[in-house]
Length: 504
Image 1 (cartoon, rainbow, N blue to C red):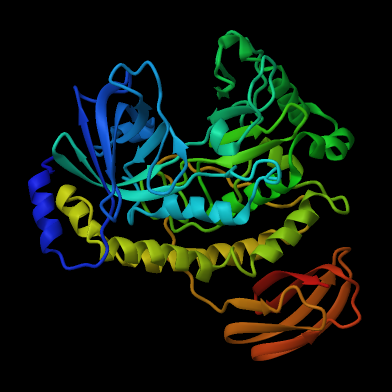
Image 2 (cartoon, one colour; image 1 turned 90 degrees about the vertical axis):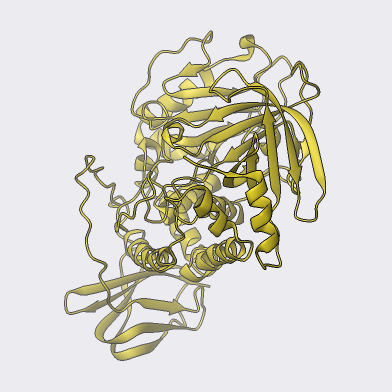
């Protein structure tokens, strides 16, 4: 594919009339970049104000399925000199100081922004529980846009990204004994709690897990603890599992990761494209997401699915979503979801994050130059309309499904390739309930007039309030009700709307 030369890019940059300037990355290598080994070169990162940093580096192609694309993603290891015998930490574009970076091609993302926005949303939703001890720790990665020129040829828009590793999560360092540990899930098997193969501590892979940290020496590898946790999830009796799982896995992380993945309907992040970590030897495990591109109604190739129903799960969550005890996973997840639906998990909030990136890439001319470099790419503003439609449909589904009777949350069947049906979007009245939480009254607001029977149930299933609605709005009193979680249901001629309600 024909590329723009650096000269043409500079000419375009000088003739476009926009106020903002994207950071620039120039890579020069001693030879072609391959999967392995890393090829030596230099990287120069120039920020929007013109401040430049140049480093020796080793470059590899990264990604598995993404390697088939014409536009490649790269892993960048910063070196102290041309030999690569020592690594060198440097900070780029306001992110962490480190020696290991990714250059993401964003190829299967129609607007080149979903992975970046999804990571930002995750870090809004979740903070690591040990931040008081490790204030620099981050629960995900930051990404910054830049334009890449490789050996004088313009490669288009990229995202320079931090990596999930011990330093990012501030895990306890290995000191001769295992303390903080980090594994990467690479597919079905042990990561999805479907298989429990024997392990061999001489190998850095087990059951589709990859050993990531500690990496000081092969003698540090010990799969026994992870094997024990996987065995516990797969084979412990219900009474043992439900009474003990919070000692082995951080409950808040389990809840928020589940809600996050399902708010995105992330198709590929319940067995692969996730990290499993432990801060210290006696600490619980927690999840960290990775490669969030097949999300929000797009498949792994960036095509629209028109599918907004079905819950993402694995063997661990299959058990957790049957934890119907008071204060258990289901009740806690419903409370957390209800709170998140007031701010972070809303169509308006997510669309605001998306619009900010979209406007930035438009204003800097990045979309236009991406098209010049890769003619198959054309910015499609209807992607914004599709995303808004999909978010409305997804949250309407989750508002119903996550308040269905405990133990009945669905796990979708995965269609065979080529068997995905593409329904037309269905439009109808949508329901908003506010304020929520509340202690006096609720307002129900529909986007179109309806005639509906409205019922409010407590967590035992007892009907505590009922009313009728003819129109678009209704005020329902909750005064005198005990504090707790309630389920609101509205019925109208075969249609039903459901919403969780918290009374304080």
